[in-house]
Image (tube, rainbow, N blue to C red; front, side, top):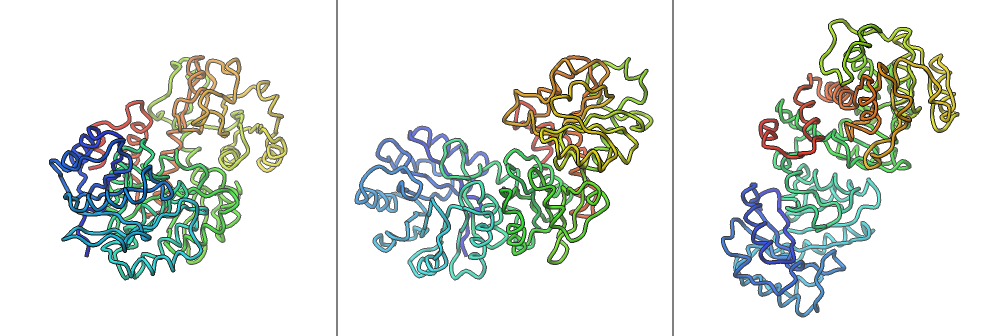
Length: 524
C-alpha cells in the first residue's frame, strides 16, 4: 500500500529561487506530495537549497525531451544526476523503464518506473506494462498521448487488478478524463501542476483545479461519473456547477469534461459505458446527433430533434432537452409584462422575477441560429404562442426549422430588416475566444427591444454590451445556463439542485477577479 497524498504537485522552474518559493507556497495551499522537475533548471541543481525546509515527501525527476522533458545534457550526465538526487535526500525518484535496471535501489527511497509516449497510445501498451511490473519499482507510471476519446478507457482498464500500484493516464486535452478518473480505478495518486502556465505536460491540470473543481481526493471506487461532451469543452462551466452541487448535497459523484470531436460521438459513448458514465450534458456540436443516437426521447427532444442531456438506461440512453424548458423559464422570469412597462424600465438587466409571468403569446421573436440550441428555442417559443422568425448562416437549416414550427425564415443578410419584440442569439458568434464580434449591427438595437444572448462565456458579450448601451432589456446566457443545468442535475440525481449556489459560482467564475476568498464559503 502506497501511503502518499492523492495529488502529486509538479513544480518546474528554471531558477532555484522560484522553485524554493513554489515548494513553500504549494505546501501552504495544502500540497503534501511534490515532484521537482530538475530538467527545468537552468543551472546544475543545488540539492541543499532545493531540499531545505522540505515540507513533504518529494520526487526527483529528470525528464528527457523524447519523454516530454527539457534535459539538454548527455544521458550519462542525467543518470549521474538521478543517482545524486537519490542519495541527497529525495523520498522518491522517477526512473524511465529503459534505464531503471541500471540504477540500484538506495535505502528507503521509493521508485517510480515510468513510460512516456508523447505521440500515441502504443498497440503493445499492455505488454509494455507487464514488463514494467517485473522491474524493481514501488509504483508503475504510464503516460501516453490520447488520439481518440476512447483511449481514456483503454488506459483506465490497466488500473483494474494491477499487480503493482499503478498511475496510468492519457496526455493532451482528449486525455483529461483519465487523469480525473484514476482514483475511481485505484490509482494511488495523480499529477497536477502548481503553475499550469509553465507547460509542464500536455493537458496537465492545475492543483487548484484537481482540488477545488473536481475534489479529486474524494473520488473512490463508488463515485458515480457524469460529464459534458462537446468540442470544445475547455470553456465549459458545467463541471464547476455540477461538482459544487454534488459536494454541497453530499453526493458521491464527479462531473468530467469529455472533448469528443464530431465524428467520434457514437464510438466514444459506447467506450465510456465501461467507466461507466451515468449521464451527460451535451453541447456543440453533438446535440442533434445525441438525439438521433438515443433510444428513448422525451417530448422536447422529439420536437426539437436535439438533445442536451443523455441519461444512461441499461446499454442505451434516454435523451432530454433542458434548454427547452430553461428558455421558457428564463423568458417568463425576465420579460417585461407589458409594452407600457417595457418602455419605462431602465436600460439594464432585470435582476428579479416579475410579479406575474410574462406571456410570449403573439410576441414576434427573431431567432438567430438553427443549430441545437436554436432548435430547442424555436420549438419552445412555438409552444408558448410566439410568432417565430428564424435566420441562419446556412439558409436551408433555417427554412427547415421555420417549417417545423410554423414560423418563417429570412436570409442571414436580411436579418436587420426584421421588426420584432425579442431577439435571441443562438449562434456561437461572440463566444470566447471571438469576443470582439456580434451577430447584429448596433443600429438594429432599439430602446425597449428584449435582447437575449444564449452565450455565457463571456456573460457580457459584445451583443449584450451594445444592447445595454442602446436601452434594450438584456438577458444574458448565465440565467439560461444555470436554469438548464439545474434541470439536468435533477435528471442526474433525482434531487433538486442548489440553484442559488450554482448561480453564484458561475457569476464568480466569470468575474474579472477569478479566485476570491469567498470561494471557500461556496466550496465548504
